[in-house]
Length: 136
Ligand SMILES: [Zn+2]
Image (cartoon, rainbow, N blue to C red):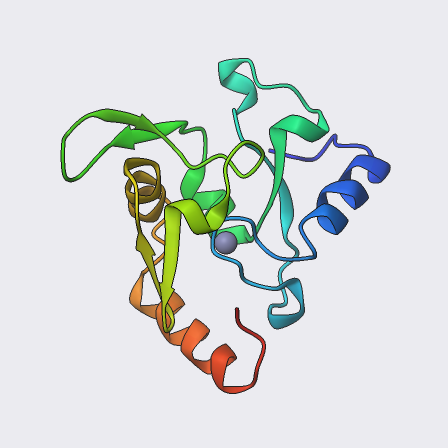
């Protein structure tokens, strides 16, 4: 998805995010696989490869998000776009409950659901990172 992103743009995306996944807040320092620039609006949907449409994402968030741009809100069944790290603020849409990411809004709910932010293995990993002071 991100193979032809120029090095300077990759660096900007990484530094702007402080090296953390902009969806699940996982720090690059905690994992082996490299975080990647994610097209917030995927290219299939007309999203451009430019700073305003890129977010730093860990491999799991990136893979789970795939070419999606949103989903049906599990509470209302409304079609809702994902949380957008460029135009929205994480704390307005999510809240940490220990290692669990609680959604606060429709955008938060579809993002937690499709990116599978609270899969048991991910919650367990965050729990361990909290213990050693690497999360959030
Ligand atoms: Zn992530």
